[in-house]
Length: 406
Image 1 (cartoon, rainbow, N blue to C red):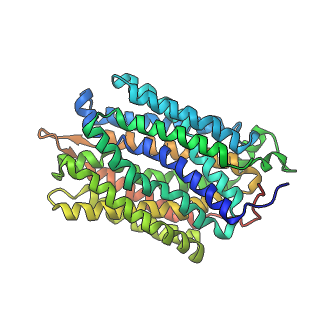
Image 2 (cartoon, rainbow, N blue to C red):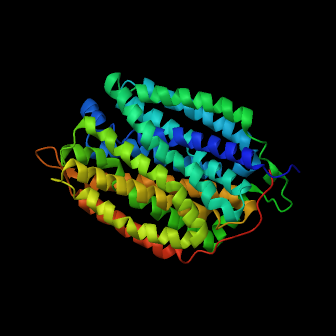
């Protein structure tokens, strides 16, 4: 049995996982600001665009369910170095897609291979970082969301504006190749879970996860947490341009400012999570999310500085809520079942995001001027889901057992 990671190696591990998460998140996020281009280029409706966004998340959810049968039977490193390059190839196929149908197929493939990456990264963090420091560790990995909005999305929009919409996907595929090599060189074996004395069969592990009421509560919290934001997020760029009058050249500022704010606040929320408690911080942020969520859907006619203030607040609270949320959810299961649990949780999250985008796409319409209608109804649905997640989080029982050695 090898010793715990040294502080320097733990930091390197967290930064590597953050880089992997960066490309995975950016691949999903870039679809939303490109919404106006896709709807015009392919002549598709809001519901069809919602399906394009959902294709990734729903296939990722299916992939997560499938992965639950094998994630704890392989070394974390080996599994990561198999799925991540395949994800990169699928992203490359997105960039090469000549039409809507081809892009849809490529998005499904990217979701199938990428669906396990988030769960695998969070499982590795929960495996190697002690309970009392897990909030801060999660905040490091979660900064990938902030960096993707600060640098990834604006850079991708720059490439799309000056080259074509294909270019961002080529750039992501290139980064995946570089990070795959770096992960191969730097990650430890991460196979201690294979030698656990209480290790059980795959289907028995799944059964044990699903038979525990506390796990089911955690899945509900996780699903509601993701559903709340994705009733609004997929259509935010379309709404701000068609209804609020934001210019296409001003959209990158929304992601830049929102990303900077979340990047700065992530470590604060991580420390706050460890000091005040995971559940309490999550509940406060889940309740606070309602204000910027509804303000986003009712921002028509506001000046640019107000639009940017609202969007920055939305990104900050959404990202901040994920830090205590994932630290809390990953602590709701004992270590020997954590891989299976987190994979099933990733499937729940992906299905929730996809369902939210589909439901919102059916609610939101367009008037004769091309503006979105009933966007506020989708926002109200998200607020309800967020409040319900805050209430249910108070009924979770958290584990604080020892860390798994790597």
